[in-house]
Amino acid sequence: MPPTPLLRMPGRRRFLGLVGASTAAALSGGVLSGCSSGSGGGGGGSASAATSLDDLIPTYIPFEGVTPDIEGLHGAPDGFTSYPDTFLQALSEPRGRGGEYTAMTPMWGPIPPGLGNNSFFDYVNGRMGSTVRFNFQDGNSIIDKMNAVIAGRDVADITMFPDWVIQLIPQFNRAVGELFEDLTPHLAGDAASAYPLLANLDSDAWRWNVFNGRLQGVPWPSEPFSSWVLYRRDLLEEYGIEPPTSPDELFAIGEEINDPDNNRWAFGDFNLSIRQVFGAPKQWRYHNGELTHMFETDEWRASVEYMRNLFDAGLVHPDIVAQADNSKELLNSGQIVFNQDGVGAWHETYAAMLGDHPDFRLDLMPVFGDSGRDPVMHSGDPSGQSVFVRRGMEPEQVEEVLTILDFCAAPFGTREYMDYRYGEEGVHHERDDRGAPQLTDLGNGEVNDGYYFLSGRPQAVTESQYPDFVRWKTDWYNDAAQYTEEDPFAGIRIQRPERFSGAETPLTDKVEDIIRGREDLGQLDQAVADWRRDGGDEGREFYLEVLQEHGRD
Image 1 (spheres, one colour):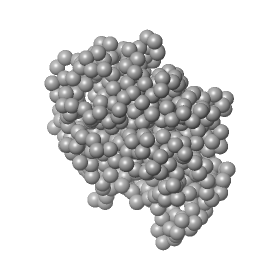
Image 2 (cartoon, one colour):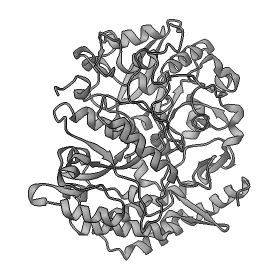
Image 3 (spheres, rainbow, N blue to C red):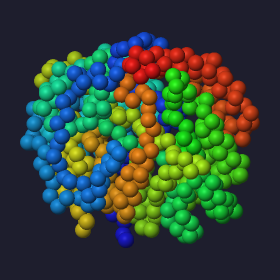
């Protein structure tokens, strides 16, 4: 199998493969998005019921697109095992008015040639009737840049913020109203019918983009789960070993395949996933009028002890013990066999590896619980990023920008989707014998994810160019989604109190030391007690008030 251009393109790393493994997610037992006005405020936190936001968001108008081959169950995305023979034209073209707008988005990988030297940009801008001039920022240091942007009040006409970045920017709720356009008059209710592909986005994702009682952002609807354990399915098959179905089996497999003398260790770090295996809540468990935080549960403690045992047994690669940031490379090279990552890292890895290694196979570790119990799967936030429009533009300019975002919200199966993802057929990509797009040499140098980051679209599993991928991933999703945690705060937008959020970092740092053997397990009780004293109990009182205010106590 010769390498194809698309499989060898290093610059097409997908955002979702990184966000699930982000530092922000690792530090939090359940970070929730900034919210609209409600109870409390400032450092004390605030909350509002999502149902109270219905007048601020678009009326949902489903787009009748292509029929999936595999239906998603329990809220999981649909799967498409092939590309359609012909693509639907979702929009009349072009709808732009010839305006030019700047856009700031992250970029992982090499920066492509800019406007004027990039025929991909020329093609997509022509299809929209508007010009977008991108200012790409290094995705690996995006938090530093976005902090500077907010502090300096110097924003592009269109700016994309990953949701986890929003969580880490102090006073973002205040800044968003000062810097970005109120989209409520343009998109609330039936007004969104002027932008039919934006109206096709999930209502919960739109609610996640209400700040201070106004609709301010355009969402990126998220996949149900942000991260899980990926494993080298090809290597397990070489060993003749079936995937694990319990924590004990996982440990036993690790002992069997661990071989440091031949530069192979069983595991990377998968602390967040093991919490779910043992049944710990994402943040709070509500029972008989009491709230118990994850850190206070026996299930969470059991997950910490389990991870400590893995490290003590020498089953974890020494780079991971030292908290190096090279787990992807270790998994790809076979130096480790199991590793937690963002779910989107799966097809990113295929893109990097299959061209030279056609027998390379990844899969998601099956979902299982401890001692025959069900796992508790932690769902992600409804929107994984937000796209904002600069405040101060003329109304007709805002409307033109929204036509750009509408174009970039086109779902799989449309011509518009193929345009902003792969460029012009016959120029930037060709379709292989399965109908899947493969980038040409020109496409490899020019096509990028800029437009992809300018709007969200309904989630779907579509990467049929990769062997077995669609079937394996959709089967995993349809199984995992049935174990999604019952969240007592579902449908309530919450900004957490600052002391409560701040108390997590010392505890999670202590946990990292404990599981790596740098601290004794006996330190865990004191670390939890310190967390309660320094903000945990304050957070409990706040969250109980939220439940009472919303009639859930």
